[in-house]
Image (cartoon, rainbow, N blue to C red; front, top):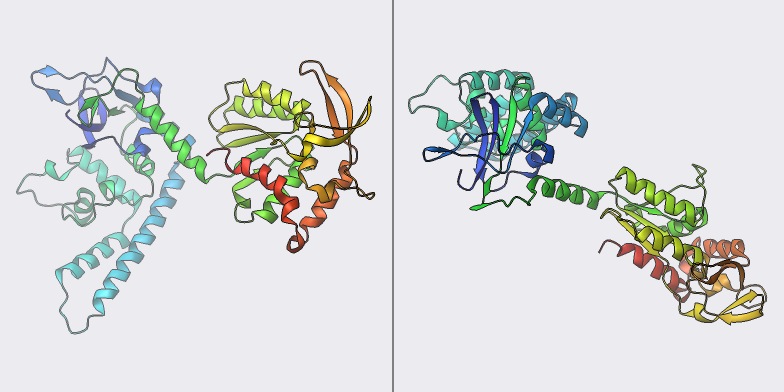
Amino acid sequence: MGTYYGLEIVAGIDRQIFSCEKGLPPSEFLTLFRPCDRAYPSFPSGFEDGDEPYIPSHAYLVTVPRLVERLEVMGFTLPALKSDVKSCLKADLAHLVRQIEEHDEQDGLPMSSYVRDLKRQRRLLEQFRLDRWVRTMRDLRARRILHRHDLGKDYTGLTPLQRHILNVDDHYDSYYFGLPVSDLRYLMRALLICATSAEQVFLDLTEIEGRHFEEGEKPVDDALAETIRLGRVCEKILILTEGRTDTRILSKSLTVLYPHLADMYSFLDHEAFHFGGGTGNLASLVKGLAGVGIGNRVIAVFDNDTAGEMQADQVRKLKLPENFRVLTLPHLKFARRYPTIGPNGALRTDINGCACSIELYLGTAALTGEDGSLIPVQWRGYESKLKRYQGELVDKKSVEQHYLDALNAPESLDEANLASMRAVLQIIFTAFA
């Protein structure tokens, strides 16, 4: 086999190679197969090295009906195929028309062979229909002609569409088999229309780039993981918080302070769906989403307090997928000596890890009461596991409202008071760095 992969459609000992190129196949082909499709060692390859039959060690085999079902689940349905072909045809025809118009503007010059070829290609695409392509491919398969090298030197009698599919004239090599599609999985869906339910699709990756895959290597798994990773880059990142207040503050801050990044994130809507708040509910939600294998990137933001730290530590101990991040609100310098009320009276103490909910990150302007002093934290329940109390700001509502009102007049915002919130948003921005 050398350094080539092979993609074939087989029925018993009858085999037809649809693609055989150097290196790894396109990722779109690789993602159609799964580890359960491994064909080693029972399936011999169509490539032979010497007199001994070549047995592939990294080959995958799946029946046509099963691969059709897999493509359907992935969204590569027949209606989607037809729509994609129509869209690509429209774009290609528009490009050809522009090319022809550019050359036609050269008045007084005779029509070149290049322009004649362009016009011939335009006529073919204007008459192109998916059902005609399918009938032609079935005919070529029956005649065992799938590539130019299958033709004899003196072979004649090909129709324009057959010449187009086989790229006999070297005019249209940007598509496999001349089928205009935006994704090779649409091509595979079209090729399977030309196959029978008794046939199978065979992918041989045994030797790529002059080396054999080791038994522990998983090229199909790697291709799936890379495809998912690339897709996630374009998807919105889901931010989960402990409650509706956290979501309201973070989403509004993101929109006002970083409007160019706002549409890259989405938040759980606690209010619209009556989803309960609290650290316990956030931890359960993270576990549930990880358990069902959600594909989006997910950031869970826990408060920098006793309950938040305890729940965040428990979630971090789980084997969460790579697309999950568990964050705790950052420590605050000014919170090292913050006014508190407790059994021992009013004291200034370090409330990091004990009482820093989202309201503590809204700036000293919002945290300052009418008497000019910082609104204190009230110590409440005791957490025996961490051996510390849980604290809560005495008047959360007024602090939140003061901050949100300030965001409504961004031109008057004081940067000094935004430092803590910017620190929160920065750990979100860099969560997947």
